[in-house]
Amino acid sequence: MKKQYLFLLASMMAVPTFAQETYENARLTGSDLNGTARYVGMGGAMEALGADISTIGSNPAGIGLFRRSMISVSGGLLTQQNTNSFADENKTNVSFDQIGVVYAAGRRRRNQINFGFNYHKSKNFNQILMASNRLNGSSQNKQSYLKGLLGSQANGGFSVGKTTDGYYNGYYDDKSNSTAGTWSQLDYLYWNTLIPDSKTGNFYAYDAESFQYGRSSNGYISNYDFNISGSYDNTFYWGLTFGLKDVNYHAYSEYTEQFSKNLGNVRVTDERKITGSGFDITAGIIVRPVENSPFRLGAYVKTPTWYDLTTRNYTTIANNATEGGTYDNGKVENLYDYKIWTPWKFGFSLGHTIGDFLALGFTYEYEDHSAINTRVNDGTYVDYYYGDIYETTVKDAAMNRHTEKSLKGVSTIKAGIEYKPTRELSLRAGYNYVSPKYNESAQKATGLASYGTSYSSATDYTNWEATNRFTLGAGYQHKQFSIDLAYQYSAQKGKFYPFSDMSVKDATTTYTNTAPATEVKNDKSQLLLTLGYRF
Image (cartoon, rainbow, N blue to C red; front, side):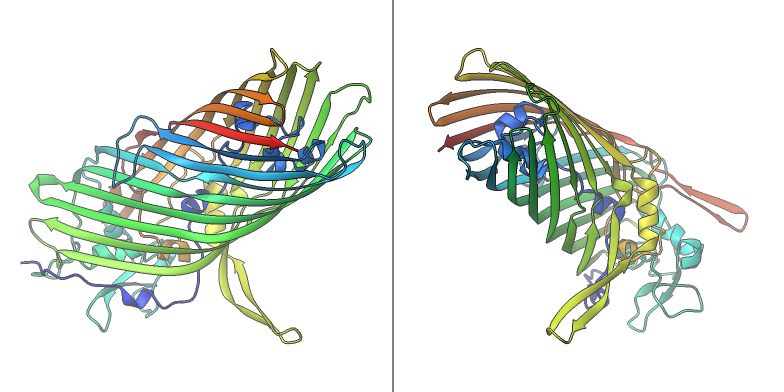
């Protein structure tokens, strides 16, 4: 009879601050197509056309084209397609997306300086992900079991032994008292509930027939951009933006495996929150190479975003196996701080207008996500002269190597058109393509000796493919007032895996643990409204 007992891994709560894992970090890189309805309606291809406040965070020189001051505010609805509600997360959510102001100090002069501030939601985490599939004998608990068979951190696993408190722990090897960097929170739960048999003391892995998975996530990354920009002789425009970011991410997941031979099931729930802040700097220019032509060239560069973050998790396991095991329930919770530096971003853009009735825009951006720099907080530095204390960090070399292999450079292509049948009315269309961020063969690194592995509480991952966005928009301007509408449809496919592949040879026996890919989608629709006033 298994014990009905709920325990807490308290030893992992009062620890130094560490780094995070590749797939978690990748959630924070890149951005949605969001901003004003005019910007979205043209697919975001306004980095050379300028004169829209949403260019403040991509090509700041676009603010230099303003000749009148303006204030705008945007909001709308975001709906996820092809899914059901899960864990109180709705398919449709209201979103406040943008508010900003530009002060044109020169008042239509050929040489002038403008100032701008804009808030916008660069990333919306609202998503429901559902997946289920056959496992054909593989299982999440077998992954933890096989890591124990590997016997040491050097082999990608750990040596299992009991602590003085009577709980199982994963050590560096069978001669060490140090916890292995490959020993995760989820390993702790499995090795203290399901894997040990309370009657015999032997260790067992349980084959699974199938799994069911559901995750709801919500939250956002907010950008607060401060800009100074200007123009010279209406042929050269420049801009500089200092950006602050606010991160609020929350996700809840449920993972259930049905064991083979009617031996019951196991259920793992995981709740994770990531909060924090970051900052970056963006610089850009726009030039008109031919003085009497409206054709424009734009170029810009964005520094890494330097993030300072805190992550929290609360994870439970319900061992519903009909035989074996030690405890029916277990739980673990943790909190720690870490840092990541996102990649540099580079952009090039073209813009052209024909008369006062047609505008064309094109933008290309490149961002190498394999260069994400995961940082370990390793101490503090005291400036005794000024009395300031600074936190010091070093690279998480092991996790950064995994990131280099798992992620890759991403190209973003934007194209847009605006047609004005009358002076007041504008019609828009756009296309926005983002190439895949993940290598097809990438896997979550559960056997990596890194703090990102140690503090992992889930084994699932998704290798998302390219994103295709199609946009339409319309705008109407009357005197100083304007109203703009945009519709965006975003389509993305991915391959979901509940855990990574493993193959372990023990004496004459080779154990494999492989989960098939499950096709998933992340299709969304957005309806956006912007109200503007020029003065």
